[in-house]
Length: 414
Image (cartoon, rainbow, N blue to C red; front, side):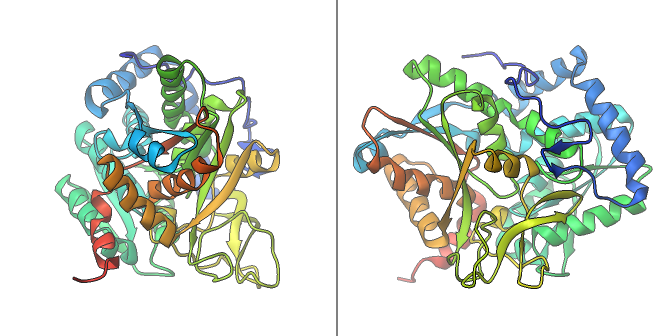
């Protein structure tokens, strides 16, 4: 397979509406100052995504710079070891910068450049979106400022160094939980202040319209490729597609092309220390007396979505061993797909994700990101309960180089 399928060749799925609403979710909840900027971004995106010259430039860079199409790998030793379903991995970890984030960052950076915006801001948790944005800005000659919580900076030190090597100004955020939520807040404050010359590249399928749909469209190349690859490789579609879910970019990218197919779609959230611990990032749980924090409808960082809140309705602190899943909200399209029973959500604890990390390393010679390890862990649970003729497709959203310090610190000393 050598060609890139057009990223605008989406399934028959008409959401969102013109206001950016997926059912009752999404929309725009922003300061008045940002409305004209969002209108400009929306107009530019709607124009450029249908512009043959933009699509040609973007898809050329996906092929020659990013390294698309990414392959699908049969995890045969792992499948044989587990028994049951065969596990296939969509290898976004093999892309330039080491994760799926480059698909969206590059697309938005190209839009920003065509809009005449030369100052780019972004937020990052695990650092992969920051690295991808810094990479795109270096390639296109744009100034780059990355906001990152100091907790995330400490546990993702290699990615901080990479961003700075690429010329980005990495600005530490020490407010709140000092993680992704607070980095987003600081980026939004910057944008309000510098709206005239600045473009904000949001790293996931969240935020105010048009960002959720724009990110989804740029990331949909994952599922479009994977769907075609499975048909070519095994002659049929997978029974299930699994992806980790923080904000939701890699998951919606993997799921979108399969929405019209009889394929079970499973989003895997960060279970942290367990749902009753209060130290997790599980948005899809029902409130109850044993829950210290629960996912409830709310307005968060420019969108109406499901968000982790405490008993007083305040945005809750979250926890995950993976910095990229440590987020209180989730993209509005995921909540809509959950409500219509099209995507199912489950969770994996820190310990389960860490065990899956080591298992994939030793069984397949692949070092996954801790985020991706959550999806691998769910596949490890699911495969033995299924028939050997069935197929699980796991989106391996990134590689684990960035997580080695975290993994080493969690291992017992010799």
